[in-house]
Length: 144
Image (cartoon, rainbow, N blue to C red; front, top):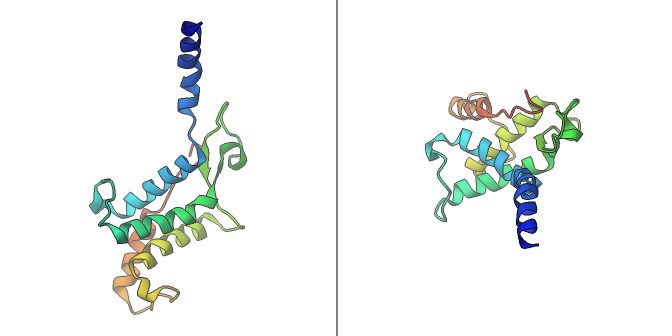
């Protein structure tokens, strides 16, 4: 009986181990984008002293969270057995608008003193910083 249960857990548990929870998928996608725009961290785990980075990560996660949907819900023709999670747009936004919003989240997390203000046309440094962040924003989805 114990052997049968152990065998069932080994073979049945393999599928459970492969299934990723929605929260874990949100964290994974947040990590992916966060570390793409913060290459100086070299994917190291954030520590208590990294308050600004932690705040940035949390704001990014809050923005990504509603955009993570099940693959069958997002993809036109998901693969057989594709039960994973995908990144999508919400509220009728285009992908361009979505990635612009994510770049805004990162930029204004780094510059809270100007949150809610547009970047001035003459402010080259801020414009270049925002563009550099935006350039790194992309998540391929639905097998693309």
